[in-house]
Length: 453
Image (cartoon, rainbow, N blue to C red; front, side, top):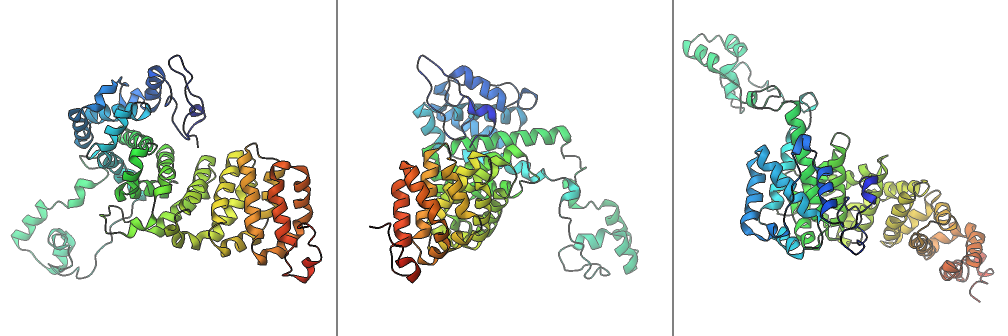
């Protein structure tokens, strides 16, 4: 999946042609130093993150430099944070330096430091008027000390003083000195950020998410990141809030999850590992469903691909099964989309979902337009032969269930037409017609079992 149209192009460096970029790789990921410098300028605008840097390949081999990067991220200082993010952005773009890849995977505290940058933005992301307000405590409001956890309010409120009839000078003195603790965190408080400061925090969070996304492409990092609960909770929370969060931050988070999906076990959200955001398995799947229903092509394509990868792990099935009717309906809708990427993502997800159990195959076959749209993908045909092959294999999985034969017999002529007109899938449709008509389990189909002769 590509983040931007610009990312689809790639430069070349040296005398040989550059290899094809990985899925979703940013511009310049497979090119030489000049293209990498351009990519750094593209990701880190000078207006917010300062000038881009040229980092020598030997830089990442030094333990001292590694510690300096982590400390710079943890400091929260703008100049240090900018330097660390720019450095990591350049290092994570280049793919060929094995030493660099190994060191990035083993830097202690680096992933948590990057996640903290995102968390710092998430803490201030929503405007004050959209945040959940503190519940007003009314129990024992006429008492000086309520015992309800907010004694300082009873001591410091003028209303409480008047209601209780207290006129003691010491109480009046406390009223004059009282400052609620929430004052320090108020939107208009002394230490809060103005619009420019919020924009800088947001850009830092986007840069950190882009680095984490790049890390997820490296095999050395996949196991570490898929087992890090803080990392998974952060990225799932970002896609959960896709309607209010920065679009690039959401895209980076979604691509990170897609890359980690083959190793992702949703049970991690109920494990004994420390939790930071309290994401549950159900909330995680609901966040994916929100992305699947999005009108943004890059998002619903990635969500379809993510579901197809998650279901491969049998441990994830109990959390996905309740959502199968919604998933089937949405994926069938995507197959009718004119976007070829959406069709390929939907077919790829259905290919894996159809292999889960008999119930999934029965529900998919009974889904309105499902078989028609699978046939349309094959007949069109889709420019990627693998997509057409998977569509044919889905039909073969559906016909393997005897309960589906009555539904699929209506398409016997269409299956026969593809059998004789397209040699690439003739074997698959020969098996489909054989399964559909040769078994004597139905008296109406027994006499029509000519395809198996």
